[in-house]
Length: 183
Image 1 (tube, rainbow, N blue to C red):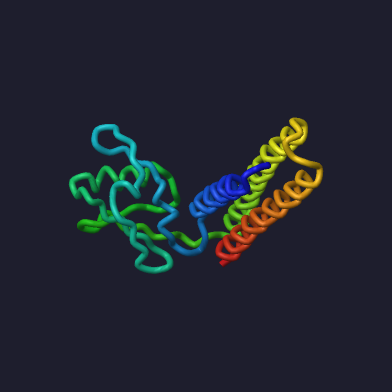
Image 2 (image 1 turned 60 degrees about the vertical axis):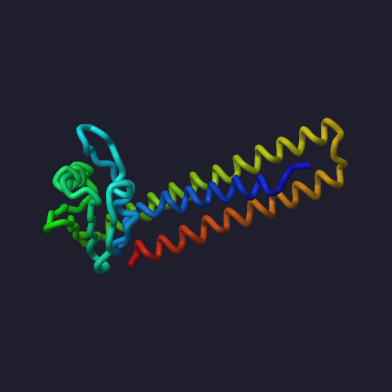
């Protein structure tokens, strides 16, 4: 017998990881996910993500703002964003940093869609690996004679249904992101 709560928990973590991963893929719209994981060096060599250093704003669809909680390091943060080479030029405007999103070219959109496809396939593989791990546990339980043939078949069917459900969930997230990229 396998615990389907464990199966769902593991597959849910993979889905969350995928959702977080694709949030950083650029679309035609500004979102905090584009910069929140950018790592900058502040405080004499300490590496920190922007999300740990201040608040991110989206004043309109084509721009982002970043307001550091510690104002004296605003220049270090702006320099760190420049060095990160994320395709946006930071401009210090008083107590905030402003960044404008350049328009995406058709080629860039296609590249991002290909990247999305690679990330989707990676997540699918992780889901299938999770299925394989739990299926191995089922086979072992059968060999140990702790489950009957009928229980094995029922659990394998349930495992496949759960796997299909999560793969579909990943594909729906990817489809939604692709629509955003296409603008």
